Length: 359
Image 1 (cartoon, rainbow, N blue to C red):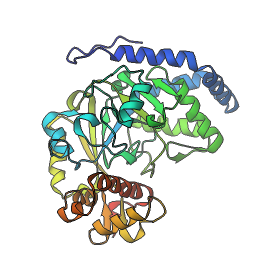
Image 2 (image 1 turned 30 degrees about the vertical axis):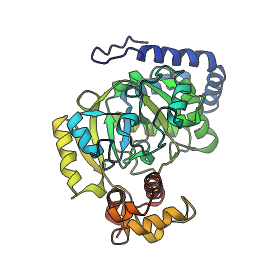
Image 3 (image 1 turned 180 degrees about the horizontal axis):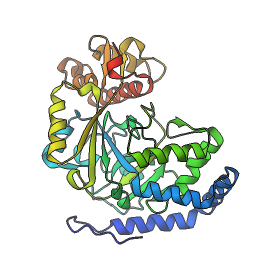
Image 4 (image 1 turned 180 degrees about the vertical axis):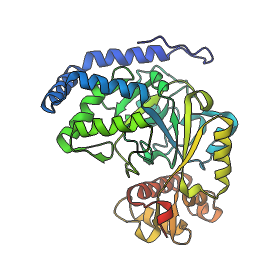
């Protein structure tokens, strides 16, 4: 492992954390390595071909950090304005926002499972706890894990050097862990899903060769290879240790098309200009409120979606507007409102059509 230095950061625990993760992998990966070797053999893929593929992933793959730009932080400023002024993507303990578990506090569920996953290395130090993203291998326009936000940052590939990885969400405390240079346990589960089910990371593949070829094309060309995945549940979660500086660690900002011609558009461009980021839109998700099912995220979500719809349509921007609508806010407890907004977004990702096509 290369030596990592963070001269401007107040702690030097990252190397220790990566080392303890590599030690865990060394002690627990025998079965995964055997399974990986077997799958490669039956798939007629040489170990050298796999090594070459891994080197491409290591050198080229970016992390996507998803977020909803209009959620309010503890300072009652929007996430996107906070990003513009601070130039830093902060963790959920600092912002008090989340598109996943709303338990980022001392003694909360997130706090507890992070302590288990990272062997208490963070202790009560909240601001330095990890930020979360997903490894982007599919080249999909909506990012690696759209479940967690309508917009996303694309990081520089080198940021992976101070990340840990889990196959699936870390709240499940999966046994398959990885570091940038040691993803054997992750590959074993990923290839097993493709080999046995022909699906992984929200997409369908004919074979592992098909996955490798499509991923190689996406990473080599840096182009969008898949329009959208509608992917809620399948991702390689990335825990980012240390700061995420927009100028130093990020290359691009990609935004949901529902924010076009809104006040947020100017802020997106301002961030891109100030921190030298590429900026683009993805097609986004929109859905007629009448088409929100009652058997996916419950009747309460269906009712909420119909209540907040604008001209019968819901999208990411409409959901955000609802969270600051005094009449709607008065109808719900704070946590209930955030949960319903989250579930409505899940319905959009699962069933939505591109924003421009939903009329």
